[in-house]
Every structure is written in structure tokens, then in C-alpha cells.
Length: 187
Image (cartoon, rainbow, N blue to C red):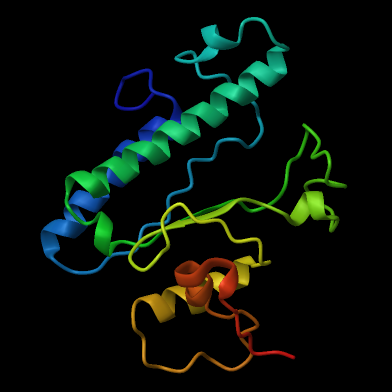
């Protein structure tokens, strides 16, 4: 239950995220929000709001599908809040995951969660924000450790990165797509 309402966790977290965004915008200061709607992690719990759409498929697959739809709707509501508040053009949004698939398989990739094959490591990475080429696709490899240097670069930090940082800024890729380059701190 969320405030005595039957609301799925992803939706409840999106409501809270939107409330925090409103509070942050009211201060007039920059903010950071880490929004992790938990879906699609185990245990698989179907969202009753969407389950009727998936009556003709395997029950486990149906539960998974409703969780994906819930996460998508939750992220959509957060993006809509940024739009409604007029800050979308000045806000960096990074959507990614922590690992590849767990139970469904990753064909044509080999492996999945908890191993080092590409199916366990390859995840979506989508960015929206100022300077990001809209509607573009880039097939150059990036990694989670590139996020910190990228955000620092995009917000205009003048301080050098701490020693030992493996990642590099993805700004060039975000602005130029496949024509861009990532410069990392290792050979």
C-alpha cells in the first residue's frame, strides 16, 4: 500500500520523485535525482493495471511485461514532470540498467546477469538533455564508469577528475554520435 492506495511500487516511486523534483525546482538550485523504480527485478510481481493485456501469454512472461510497462510509465511521468516544469531543456536524464537479463535469456547475446558475457554486461543507455543529438543512435561502447566524468563535463565542472578514474566523458558522443570520441584516463 502507498498512502492507503493500491499503487504499484514503480508508480509510487515516480510520484515521490516528481514531488522531490517540484521541491528542488522551487529552491532554484541544481538538483540530482537517482530514480530506480526496482522493476524489473525479482520477485516478479504483475501490475494488475496492465495484466489483462497479457492474458494470452505465459504467466511469468506476463508478470515481466507488466513490470516493464510499469517502469516505462513511471519514467514517462518523471519526464513529463520535467517538461511541465519547463526544465527539460536544462536537465540531463540518463536511463540505464545495472546488468543484463536474468531469467529471460538474451539471444543473440551470450550469458546474462551475474556473468561477464555480453548478455550480462550489455544494457540500454539512453540520454536526454541539453547538447544531446535528438533521435540519434551511437554504437560506440560506453560503460557505467563513464557517467561520472560525463556529468561533470556536462555541468561545466572545472575541477580535474580525481586520479584513478577509468571513465571518460561521453559528451562528444552525445553531441556528435558515432563521429565523437571518448577519451579515457587509461591506454
